[in-house]
Amino acid sequence: MRLGLFGLPGAGKGTQAERIAKALLIPHISTGDMFREMQKGSSALAHRIRDTLAKGELVSDEMVTSIALERLGRPDCKNGFILDGYPRTLNQAKTLESSAFSLDTLLVIDVARSEILRRLSGRRVCEYCKSVFGEQDYQAEVCPNDGHPLRQRADDMPEAVSIRLELFERNFLPVLEFYEKLGRLRHVDGLGSTEVVFNRISRVIDEVGDKVKNDK
Image (cartoon, rainbow, N blue to C red; front, side):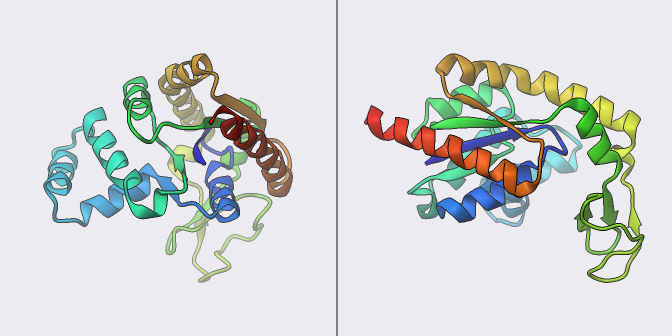
């Protein structure tokens, strides 16, 4: 199954993507991971990415899509994948859908803005290992992994979070509308424990899987 996963910062998208990948035995592919991997490479595309970032410029839709399609063409994606963070623009979505890797569905984890603000404002990051902890994970002031201090990131402050959410929603709205018109957008309630939300997602995936089989 070919899945895309969408959620506002703090919606739990990364956690759920990892669980889905393990359950379906498909790779979890994030744009962040792809960029980190590509920058270490020696290909012409890797050099272009490093040069672009070194100049402080934004990576183009064309470049991001080249990275994504290259990754999706690898053998481990033969039986499906879960995309996290791509497509991020309407142009990326249209290009993906015209390729051999069109999505079976784009899943959206819905969490109210007020809850997102609460979650992110309570989030802490280890200065040393960069592990992230929510209020429900750890209450102390030091990292349980290495004992280093936990700090609140500047972009997790309420004012910064509000700006991030506005930009995020504005950029992604055309993508969601695009998949809704295709009839391949599904929403999942993101409130509740990790297990509860995962069970909701699993039911949707089962429904989509049955539809994909019937359509073939």
